[in-house]
Image (cartoon, rainbow, N blue to C red; front, side, top):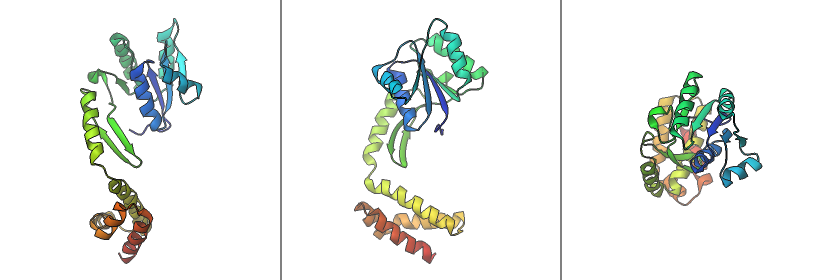
Length: 209
């Protein structure tokens, strides 16, 4: 789900909320965290303006409902299952997608375990049922990604844009892309970290097509 620029309400100010907030910040979401208290990290993020912190008072329920009405997405991450359930019900009434931590049955979406290599991302999900296992599997996959793979993504993006500007059709672009991936000279350059040299050769190949 693309969350860049979208307004996300996170209810709860503990460590679980903190992890969700950090993941959302990496995707440039606009985040409001509502809670009676906040972790030190969340407090720091609030002071620097990276997230908006709302301290809940005696009328917490009405405060949360008001914040929810102004949000695109919501995350229920309090330590009270009943509070999380009620928030999920309210979100559905207002057609706002919600993720309820540790309760996949109430979720409209899940948080996968992710690793970001720039434009290359790894995401592993267990459908919200075993987040710890998703994290373990993600770490295994991380070890299999090489610098060549990361640069290949950059090169493929460059090639695709070049081909599109040349008016080639989808089938031709796909054929050229696979040829580039198997091109030994390009592979050798990427293994050596020479992306710009690889782009020059790729441009020559595209021009021949």
